[in-house]
Image 1: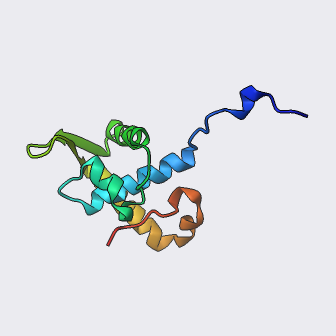
Image 2: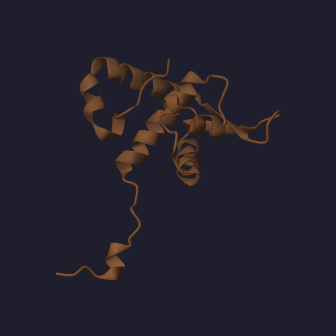
Length: 120
């Protein structure tokens, strides 16, 4: 059977697992950067686990976390970028992720948690 040309050029859609993985990494990055962070810093630092993501994907995940009340942003007085901070609820979620890693290390075998860690 020959594949039709229409089906062979479909864009690969990000799975919810991949999206969750990025969300978890952003939350822990925010936890480690208590004074806030800019998009550029999380994109460029290999410790974040997000290096190499597309800007639009990162933007979408940041906006989702803001909508869910886990993250907030404000304009910086010093740079022409938004600065992102975890909300109190976001900090609670980050603490729970850290506790899960201690209590249930098996979760880190799941794709959703792969590479998710507290940055030293």
